[in-house]
Image (tube, rainbow, N blue to C red):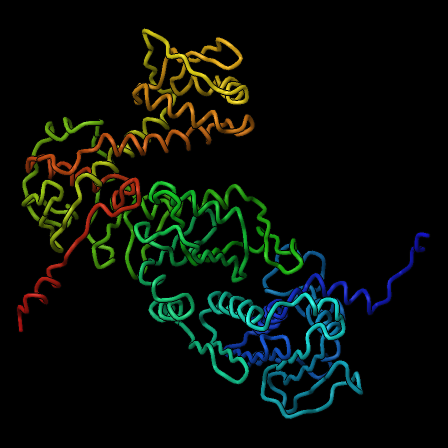
Length: 584
């Protein structure tokens, strides 16, 4: 017999709410630290026992809670952060719902003690306890919240907790993310009486880099650069791995939106798209990125634990992140310290890097020389007078090593260029520009090439026939599983044209859009750039080497080949003097 509809008791409602907000000890820790950050705390101390299952204690030196408001703090949906419906459209704080403390009180033993700034006496309240009224207690300015025996009121939930070691690891991951998001705050964490993390405030980039090294490992910060830029009112800043340091192993991907740690697929996709031209194979980008956007342009009230956000104009956010990051690689912005990134590279200068990782060189013209798929264009260039100046950041060729490297003298140091990698990037960008300038020239075939596909693949190709015609393909269906290739894009030889067609056939019918064509073609073009580039072992004249250097300086993403390897390194004169002990 079905149960009658009834109104649930307030106790059961709170326990259900707690199940949404408090998944494990780390969830409670996150809420408590966010409350401390909203209270403008400068020092936050965390004590854990048995992985946070037995005790979570968070102390801060924030603004505190007045004694007469302490009981309200444990009441469901009581908050000092919003007061009207319109406040939800522009949230400036990390917390706002007023659910966390009430949910914790429903499933654990809670003690909260606080002293508001300017008051001499603090107050304390315990739940469950003898009295629901706060009692005076000696307490410094700020707040202390203790949670003991989490889920002791809900044994079924407690059974689903993992081992103490696993729960501790979740707490540490949560603590690290919050410490990363607020470098200006001092954070401390101890477990079972042993200090595990002690972080000083990081008021500048140098100290922030040191702090990130402690939290994520020196391997990350040593191979990352700091980038910052703004586009359409969206500011992006953070530490991003240099492409040639990327690897296929799991890596930190941390997004902070208005100081809030989030897990957002749109932002992750934007970063991977920005890296697409400079990463090899399955290598992944690693980064700690901070996105600052007007509060009214983002909705943080879309997830029970506030782990996801929704952007009012998601397309613009995605475009801004891709453009800002891509411009950094195109300008050659890499190295320790801050490298500015802009949505559109400035017309008169682009920053380039040196081997030490600092922005170097001088202004580089943005207009590019016409580079074809062979070395003929190098031979037709007028040789530039080798006047060493800041206008030629990669300097002028003085020698060739092992028929593989160009040794160049620049104003700031000795530059060594891998000319196969450099020419590979030049060709790739040239071919990519041709691809984007549709419609592409078509090369008709005297004898059509018969191709066999599955029924689904034939349907995919025929459904995208209009777009395929724009990029130079002419296909004729000759049967349910066969087509004839009558023409192909002129920039590809027949074998590569067929390879691109086979890749396109693996896409879904719905995915046959312009973006899909560009992505697949860029994969093929990257391979073509590699095959068409000058190879190690091929001799170049000095004029050809200098022409290659000038073209590389003006090539987008010229610091890296199509596979993410560096195209050049620099050894500064100061480093040479140091090694030869000159001036001592």
